[in-house]
Image (tube, rainbow, N blue to C red; front, side):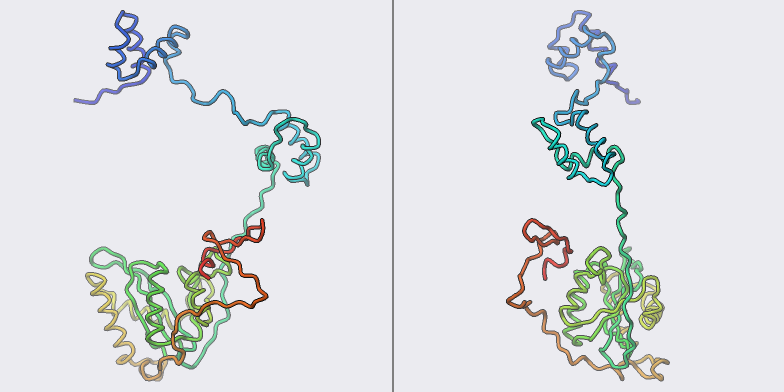
Length: 347
């Protein structure tokens, strides 16, 4: 049996018709599921306006309590056209001198009036474009590390895997290949901290401009991970956007990794990590490299002499003023609020 469509207009018409037939208000309201106050209101509107009163009425208020009077709005528009270079603060001050009423519009109200009349020129927001840094070609291990995420792939259990890889530039030694479920920086912190404890600190790390290595909207494009590296004394190298060949050694390793450790993919993350570990051992100790005169990377790589000791406390000169960055990423100097970035709140 199909559902019966029920329109509000038809229900009100039936309600009024049964009242006109002599039925009592109280039981009729109970049957229709409305209060007696609503029933009397519907019946009163019908007696006043007829059938047109049974349609839905607009819920828009009859007047705006804080609406700006039209003469003042017209005066704002006239002043702007008379002085095109004036902004809302100057026009509001001119109003204060000419207008003697009790309620003077706020600067934001004046600006809203000008914007409503298309008298405000909106400046185009400059879009930050990522840029590269100078790239080095060191010949000694641990002078430069390369880090990147190999393209994601799906495991047999239908979950995506994002391998985070770290290699040494000079020796091509594959330092780490971690199977992660996301590219969020919190997991990258864990991987890099473990590697730093095992291998020491490099002089520099080369990455692309993607998350979590960089942040497109932060100051100088720095992410929390990049700030952590800088505080550890590690320089940052970034390749030019759209030019992965500038990190060609690392990308070439990704090709070998894809062929030998991801096809076919493992059942889950644990089994996939086991495949990555076997690949690291073979890549570093068994696979000859033509670019290394058929040597193994493990023959050329040695751990860094810079041990990882964690972050030291920040110390500033006594003549400097220490200002804490708020949780929303800004500093407050008197009444001035200067936006920096949320990544500076922990510095």
